[in-house]
Image (cartoon, rainbow, N blue to C red; front, top):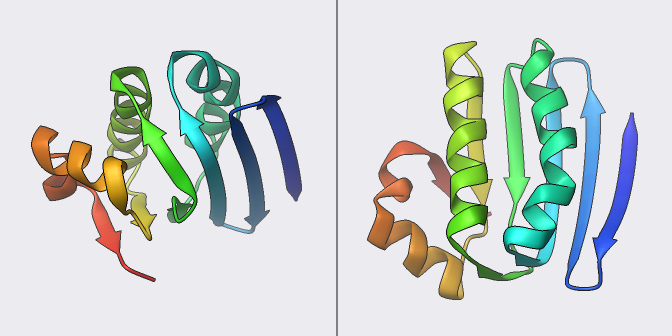
Length: 112
C-alpha cells in the first residue's frame, strides 16, 4: 500500500506499506501545521501490527517542537506494540534538535 500526501506547501509526506513493515518519507518542514496533517496516517500505522517503521528524514529541513512531539508519540505507541522505529538520514537542524532533546538516544537512527 502506498499513499502520498502534500498537506501543506512546506512538507511532503509519503507512506509505503508491505506486510509488517512501513516506510515513511517526510520532506520539507515538520511543524505545527504539517504535523497535524500527517498525524492521522502515522497513527494508523500504530494501530496495525507493524514490526518495523522506517522514517526517512533525508530531505527534512526543519522540525519544531510539535514535530518532535509527534515523532516521540509515535515512538511510544509503536514501542509499546514491540515495533522498532528507525529514523533514517537525519541531518542539519533536525539532527541538532534530536540531540538537544535526547530523542536520538531513544529512537534507532541510521545514516542510510
